[in-house]
Every structure is written in structure tokens, then in C-alpha cells.
Image (cartoon, rainbow over all chains, first blue to last red; front, side, top):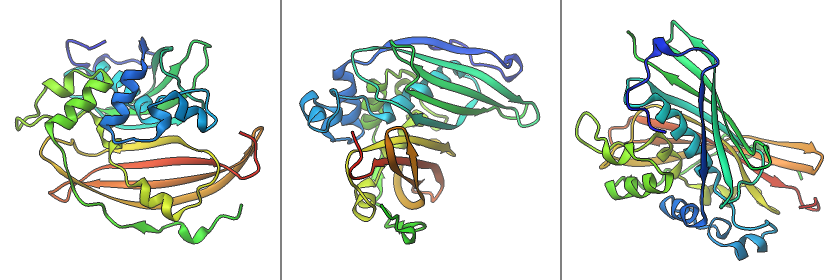
Length: 143
Length: 144
């Protein structure tokens, strides 16, 4: 997934895809993320605690979904000068651990003067639904 | 559920500064499957956290103390503006203000949305990020 060389602004075209990148977040990793972020709600650690809240089982924190999509963008940028300056995400449905997820991105707009790039990002689940959608902006320094 | 509009604009007290450690960044990177943040030092030699590290700073406990919390609540989304890198050794404090509260009615009933903006400031008084947290609560008596 990591780009060996940095992405150059001049080489980016509208319609360029980021990913798809397939990933499975197991429960241990979801718990590790929640612990690293001080998120102690039972729904992120334990099936039983999640069910007590009426959920089908343990869920992946929304912040982890945001982190995965941010990583999709920064991996695409690689070690170059482009910088992720904004990301917005909407959590439309639960994301469960131990399921196959696919991370997607798509360049929607390029602003030549500002040297900025707008990207749609989303997570697709095994049912081909999009439980997380969002947009990101990356900016390159002046040439 | 009547929304107390006087809460909009209310600012919560700044948190005590949190010192960012290389270990905290490493734990975050490991859980995210991130390699670059662990291994790539910034220009000054300090370890730079991945951008998404900004959302780990929260003072939602204070927020929930003041705002309606009923039924099952969820994180509905985030809007994050990254203004400066967060490095190991930085000391980050956070202030938060309620920006919006509104209701929406859909197929599953009526829900209340609250948008809380957190601003992260480092020890040099630089704003490093704005994070808009969007929380949703299903109203009492609604299914689910």
C-alpha cells in the first residue's frame, strides 16, 4: 500500500483511484486502537458489553475508520511534499471487526492554482454497502 | 425533545496539556497499521504523528455532562482540519465549543445531532487542528 516515491501534483488526474485496499480489522486490533486512544467504552472492547447496548456485537470506533481512510490518502501521497490538510467522514452504519473491508478513494477535483486535490474516500463492507463515506483535501507546496 | 439552544457557543474549559510521547504515537501507529509515523522523523528529528492522531484528543466527558444524552448515542462523523504536525514532545491542550444542535427525522425516527468543535493548541500556542465531532442520539421512545 505504501508508495515508494512521493506523489507529484503534476501527475495527478481527476478520476485517479486510491486503492482499493482490502483489510480485516480483527478484534484485538480494534481493542488496541481503542486502548491507544483512551476509548474505554465497552462497545469497542467486548461483545457482551456491546450487546448490552443493543448492538449486534463489538464495533470498530469511528475514529479508527477515519484513521484508515487518512492512511489510504497519506500512503497514496507517499514520501513527497503533498500534505493531507482536511478529512471529513460520515459514519452511516456500524463497522464490525473480523470482516473484510475495502478502502477506496477517487480524485474528484484538482485546483491547479491552489495546487490542491479533492478526493472522495469510503469504506465498503462485504455486503457492498458503504458504512463510512467522506472527502479529503491534499495540498502541494508551490512549484 | 426540546433542544436548549443556549448551549450553542458554550465553550468548555481547556483541558490540562497532554504531553505527546513517542510511545503513544507508536501505539497509535501500530493499531492503525501505520509504518511511516513510527519510522519517519520530521525535519527537526522528532517523531511526527500521522494526521489522524489529532482525533485522539478529546474532552467529551465534559461535553456530555452539559448536553442532552439519552438513549443510545453514536459518533456520526468528523470533520478534521490539520494545520500543523503533532510531534513527540509536544504538549497539546484542547478547548471545545458547541457549534450546532439540530434534529432530523428519518425512517428510523427522530434523532438529535450535536456538533462539537475541538481546537488543539500546542505549547507554542500554535493551533494544530480543528476537529468537529458530530454526535447523534436517538430520541426517547424511538426504536433501536
